[in-house]
Length: 254
Image (tube, rainbow, N blue to C red; front, side, top):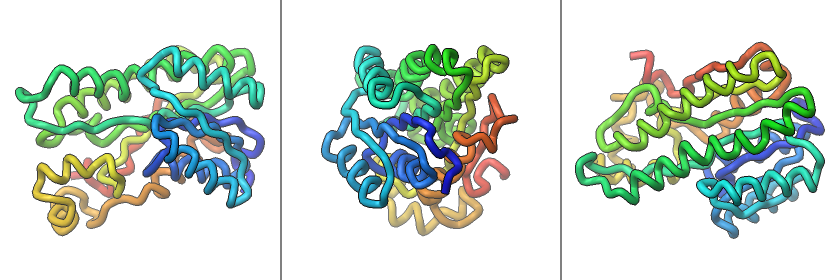
């Protein structure tokens, strides 16, 4: 259990779902993890679980759509451990709706969190990674950054931007030791999908018919995405940069 032994990792959106699973998995493999979330109670619960399992973790409460708050938690990480080896840009929102009825607030919140948040965090850690001689950035986008679905126009646009952000960072720093890769999960059993499920007739109906769009016939589990994030964070993925990896139960194979 030493695949990221001693590496300092920042993971955003760790209060639940995929982010919590990634933080736990990195800690299990020896990482020191700064868990970031806007929900104070949830992020502390994640840290408590990691520590109870013998891992090393600290909490930071922050809104990643604020550049100042992002700078703050990166500074806190450096004060704690002196470096940043891994950044996982996981925090996001999914606010579905009929496109022409979507409010300005929904558009702004979606882009501010999903796109600007990943930009701000990446921009904040890259100078330290350059000073160290390298690092790994893992962006969590979505299968909807590659293909869209009804009610997800704004969300899909934001995740498509994360896909291209990944490629741009990868090219800018390919010769300077910083790798940047992206995971595009399909339908994973997390709360972020509940509002979308409600527009599709409810979560029970979605899961009863999931093989109509996700050939594996079930939702993904957060830990399955966490295993992939761990690999990309580790030195085992040293030849991967700019890669867009789907983990979607076969959805985009159709």
